[in-house]
Image (cartoon, rainbow, N blue to C red; front, side):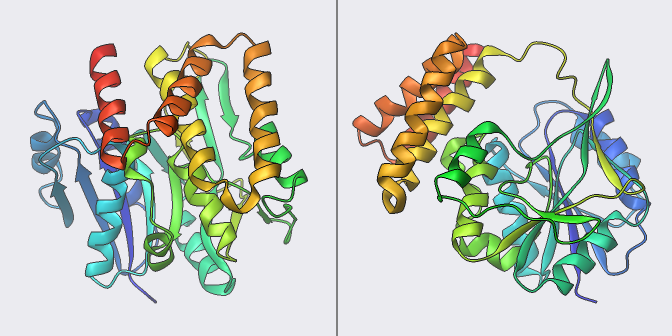
Length: 306
């Protein structure tokens, strides 16, 4: 069996990361390394984690700045590859693994399906109304499939189907392919990285498989029944526009039509913060901003908003 890593991106939250690590330690899988990537936490949470898990064989990577979701995960995957680790489960620190065989079963899928480079587990958002299954699809993706920009989804068997995109909060990847397509775009900072990543995986002739099992799944402990911070919605819109401009060249007419319909949909919904983000992404394209400038733009907006 090839070595596997579980990469947990950590920032400032001892209790959530503790729960995540504890659930990972219960997994029935041999030759597995748990890697904690700390994104320059500004409290004592990292110190507390090291003390709490002092008797466990954990690896801690300590970044000297907050690289955001994208580059934080990229750093973890690059480290795993350097150590000869072929597959990694990338986790948000607010996730919890339910069932002891989840990692082993996703590993088996990647090994058995040769064209597969990404496996998505079932992820349930934990909300006040109960646990809600993330559907791994949206109207935008459906339209891109209809336009022939993305391949059609299909059922493989009772437990597996192909999908256009996997949620970045918990995603099992083949590390070499992850790096080959560029990993997560670091200049996004956060939100939308897995969307661009997924498209590049599919355009490289690989598949993304959704593994559905009622006994082995992920809980995502964030309450979507509450309103989302404006800065988060802004970045979602900004990065959607950036993704379109960066990747439209092979499908210019079809993707332009899809993007325009999407913008009209956002306008009719009166989702003004998201629309403001889209307009910022368009401005970034017109200004021919470098990737460093795009990243600075996101960090500056976030710092002003929180």
